[in-house]
Length: 470
Image 1 (cartoon, rainbow, N blue to C red):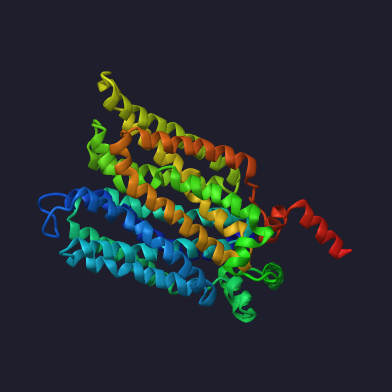
Image 2 (image 1 turned 90 degrees about the vertical axis):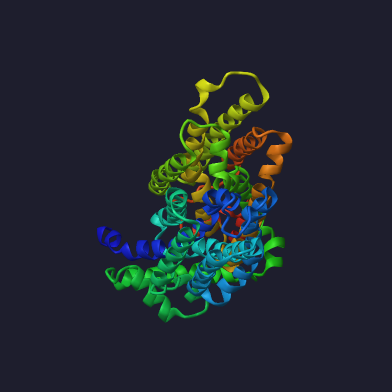
């Protein structure tokens, strides 16, 4: 057993390299936080200040671009494999930064956000699949959590450095992060599951040995290959197209589960908080400057993600998701309450100057602890191989749609109903999400892909399988 554990360092290296792409995407997601105040100022780098409406489109159009990218990626991942598709996504994350540097019109900014959103949508899909397929069963959750860890590293980079460097230098930093991903991942192995799916057993064995650091014996490799082959064969017995995915009764339960969890992930307010962080801090009249608060918020998320990666394979997915959802609800109620007292009452809130920053801190700790990190783990676990690419693409498109709506209408909703109302709406969704997870999400900790699919079958399907065997 110790020898097996010692052999896993290549799995960690491959997962970290793959999810460095998420750092590159996170730079795009958080870029508006320090950049919008600059673009809306008198010294705007495009020659004129952009309007509030243009700013809302600049924030939200990234998420809108994720939707078509998701379906294109579903085809790429099955036709060209996980590795090549990730590299294509990395190129889409690199190129737009040149446009940011030389942009002289808001249309150029829209274009770079669309291209960046295309790259972000691509790597979001492929990383969750790739990391799930290269990992051993008992560390799959941990490796899946590197997805959100590297995302937070990219976010921290923007929040910590963005307010203190020029607009151009922030774009150069984005280019460097994307280049690091492309320069490292090109040397990583393709998923053995994909290679087995395309009947390339020799290379599947070769890559499996690489991922095991060439330290395990032949019997272990043969057993793993047989397990992968069995899983792929069982999954591929059913036709894996979009229509089959949407209409086949065997997928209804997992579609329902992932719809609920993906709704929780996007409608808990993450997109709005990421994009408007500095603006929210400034509006709250916090006693700490928005620049310093941004750094604090970036830093505190890293320990939360590390804690999640440690606990996910010990406590399980379900307890972490419920804890994170309820924690986010408390934080959002606190944030909304502060804005309500500030805008709707005559109460002296000078003694509550600590509340908005503390509430955001709690939200940014609890959110990556479960909601943001585990959704991608579950996407890679719950769907069988024959529809995994289609499923992850469909739910990425669904998530992109919800994120677009949240980021586009956060400001108009705040203006129409009061700045407190969106936070209370997000809090209510978090509570409903925790209840949903409690009743419907099966625990996948430590299970093989075959065991997970078996646990998702209805009683009728299980009885049919028994009859077929008999």
